Image (cartoon, rainbow, N blue to C red):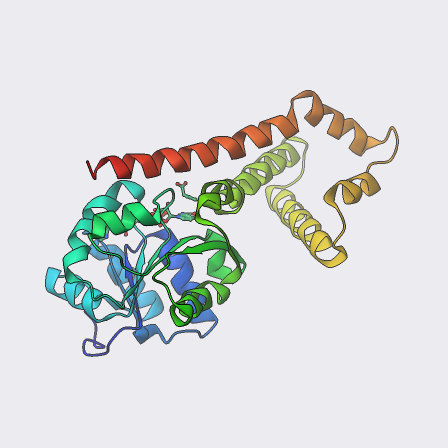
Length: 285
Ligand SMILES: NC(=O)C1=CN([C@@H]2O[C@H](COP(=O)(O)OP(=O)(O)OC[C@H]3O[C@@H](n4cnc5c(N)ncnc54)[C@H](OP(=O)(O)O)[C@@H]3O)[C@@H](O)[C@H]2O)C=CC1
Ligand SMILES: O=C(O)[C@@H]1CCC=N1
C-alpha cells in the first residue's frame, strides 16, 4: 500500500484491469473522488498495481491483509474481474461483507440472484454495464438494482457512472441486450474505423490523414445525431445523392447484408452475455 495506508477508501475496485481503470480515470478527471479515496487491487499483477498507483495516486493493495482491509472498510465495492473469475471472488467476499456495503458489478452476464447466491446473503447490489469510453467521461452505462438498494445507495451508484457519462436505469433482464449495444458497441465502431482507415491507406492516403479523417467523420456523425435529434436514416439520406457515390457505397453494404450482419452480431453478443452468466451460475450447483 502507498502512504495513504490509514485513509478509509470511499470506493474499492476488486479487479484492476481496463474497465476498472476507465472508471477510475473518469472519477478522478471529473473530480468526483479524490485519488486517495479510491482503492484498487488485483489478483497477482504487482507491476500493474504500481502503474495504477503512480499514474493515478490511488491506494493499491498487494498483500492479502491489505486487500481484506480495503474490502471491509469501503462502503462501495466495484467487482471488475472477468466473468470466469467472479464465482471464486464472490464466494470469498460473502463472509467478510457488512450488510450495508453496496456491491457494484460491471461483470457481463452475471445476474443479481447469482451474485447474491454466491455471496450467501441478500447484499445490496447494483448490476451495471458500462463501456470503456467512461475513461473520457463519454461512457454509456446501464444499471439495475437489487431490491435491497435503497434510494440513498441508488444515488451513490448512479453518481459513479453519471460522473463518467450517460446512465440509464433498466430492468435487469434487459442487461444482455444493452451489452450488445453499448457495452461492446465501441468495439464495433473501432472495427468499422479500422476498415475505413485501411481502405483509405490502400487508396493512397497517408496513414495519419486516413486516421484523422475517419475519427472526425465518426465524431461529426455522432454529434449530428445528438445535436439535430434527427433519425439516422434521414441523416444518411441527406448524404446519399441519387445515383451518387454514397449510394454506390451503400449498395455494396446492402448487398453484403449489412443490417442483418449488425443485428446478428448484436444478438450473438446478447446470447454470449447470457452464456457467460449461465456458466457462472453452474458453479453454484
Ligand atoms: N473491457 C470492457 O470494455 C468492458 C468490460 N466489462 C466487464 O468488466 C470486467 C473486467 O473486464 P476487463 O477490465 O476488460 O478485464 P481485465 O482482464 O482487464 O481485468 C480483470 C482484473 O480482474 C482481476 N482479478 C481477477 N480475479 C481476481 C481475484 N480473484 N481477485 C482480485 N482481482 C482479480 C485481474 O487481476 P490479475 O491481472 O492480477 O489477474 C485484473 O486486474 C469483465 O467482467 C467484463 O465483462 C464491462 C463493460 C465493458
Ligand atoms: O467482451 C466482453 O465480454 C466485455 C463485456 C462488454 C465489453 N467487454
